[in-house]
Image (cartoon, rainbow, N blue to C red):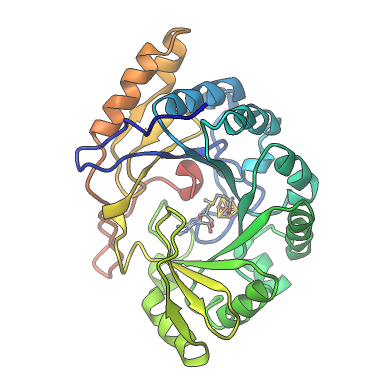
Length: 336
Ligand code: SAM
Ligand code: SF4
């Protein structure tokens, strides 16, 4: 079946055909830039069931969403999550979805990579902020580098295309980025560097962690030849090709270069709240309309209401004058 183009068009003429779904706020890691050390997670009763998540994805797909990224929290720690991937597979099979992707910390990949591939997932993003086991533990607070590397191996074995995401952190991994780049490209993985965004309270000082990627790029350019490329994945990353490795390097720079003008996505939390912009508080509840009736008319109306309120862009700011734009919500709630 061929799907018509999305009729989800926002007030600025941007066609929304990409949905990111956070399936849980829980995670087995506590990355220092993402969470505090003692997080309180949502009670299970607040979460959409897997059937509700499937119905919600179905409603977006009917309106023309073509790509879905499953995220979290750590999506692979949600019990029974493969059931959602299995039901999304039907949309891939009949052509209504172009792709289903996953963003994961990799800790459970050794167990799930094969099944993900069977469900039609072709590429995944794995977050990895250090190749030093001790530093990896410090950044994630609870994670094991060996387990993640084994997960990445399993993904490769299963035929999944892996992209590595690395958050650049001042004085934490900034001097390791060149090694991560060489390792990733050596294994045939694209690498995307991400600037920290001011999402949610953490224990550390965000300003101290923040490393503008313009600075990182200038440093990398001293060792590597970075050729600009028009390559895009439909996401916010801007890519260069590294001449010495032949690999691709992406930069996601919400702070130094706002990427809002081409934003084609909305995000749904695990409680069924749709955020029209990662960097704005405005949101629309989809759980109540979802639960109010078995038909999807109310849900559809709520989705249209949300798209009609998609803002032009975010207003993140990190500065010394009190972090005026600090968002109350952590990244694990909205899904990265
Ligand atoms: N747990 C999975 C993972 O880490 O890949 C999926 C969810 S995580 C929230 C998605 C992405 O957001 C990860 O690449 C993570 O590094 C990134 N992230 C989390 N908090 C962030 C922040 N405050 N600023 C920038 N990126 C962040
Ligand atoms: Fe968990 Fe991902 Fe947040 Fe790290 S970045 S704490 S792995 S949700």
